[in-house]
Amino acid sequence: MASLNRPARLNRSLLAVFGLVLLAAGAFAITTSYGWLRLVDRDRPLVPGAALPPTWVLYLVVVAVIVLGLLCLRWLGAQALRRPKTTTWRWESVTQDGGTRLDASVATGPFAEDVGRYPGVETADATLSGTQDDPTLLVTVTAGAEADLAQLRQRIAEDAVARLRQALDLAELPTVVEFRFADQPGTRVR
Image (cartoon, rainbow, N blue to C red; front, side, top):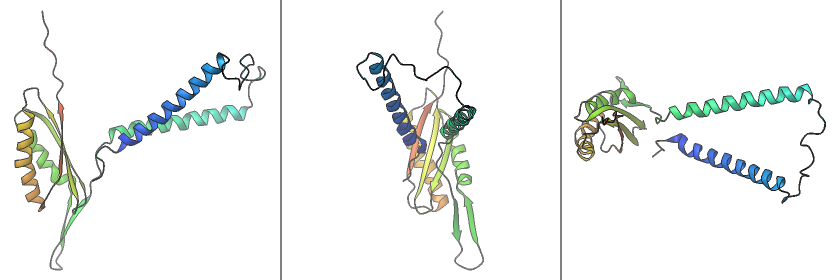
């Protein structure tokens, strides 16, 4: 089964690398400043002379900053796209008359609406990922404070998933249910 949260592993790895680089740079600066590490003379200026660098260096710095900014925006955009990739399912007819195509997101629309009507559920969203031979259903349920999560999970598995499995003619449908709690304003004491 593919990871349901694809950017998480990349984020952790990149954050770990950035953290290690920053720790190493900080350790180098501190040890050089106190004279414990003598690779660089601490009394010597970082840049020789007071003249500005050549113009091409300034352009190179601007281009590098723009590229870094665009990469950061791409990384930020990847955080919003946490849905697994869906595919189009095909049922071929036994005869040569034709076949049926179904976008996986079309199949989960009624499922999510049905789960969204359960007591204690604020919103529900579903994604059907994988191929027809190896599907995975990801259900995200935002529940109110009064919701009984165990009962809700059981009803989703026994009612909604069973009906979706029957509609798609699947023997098994591995399902991951993620519960979130609705933001409820706290009570105020007067």
